[in-house]
Length: 110
Image (cartoon, rainbow, N blue to C red; front, side, top):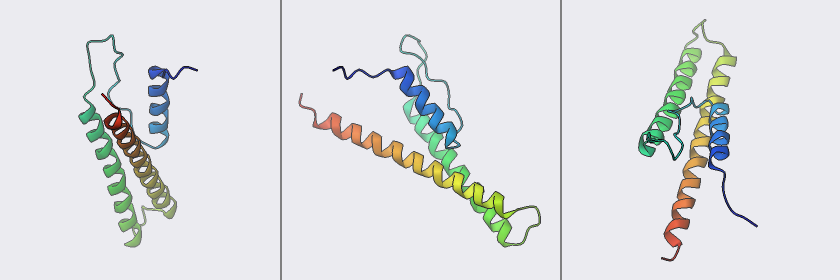
């Protein structure tokens, strides 16, 4: 039984999940043969900023609805809140997987 991972398939699945969670596509991830590389720190920072922006948008809609703004409907508030929650949960799961991978790597004997 082989434990090889098809990285291109994994990356496309992760991109699809991110789009479903409302996280816009980041810079395209270059193949290993390409000279162009993605900075992991920038990718993480961008994801955190996107989740934060979605949360702030949800909070703004909530405040506007509570203030009685005629332009904001309850359905918009609820959808924005759910998108913010799902984006945060997706980011949390990615963090958990990264921490697990880090712990696995650190516990590997040299």
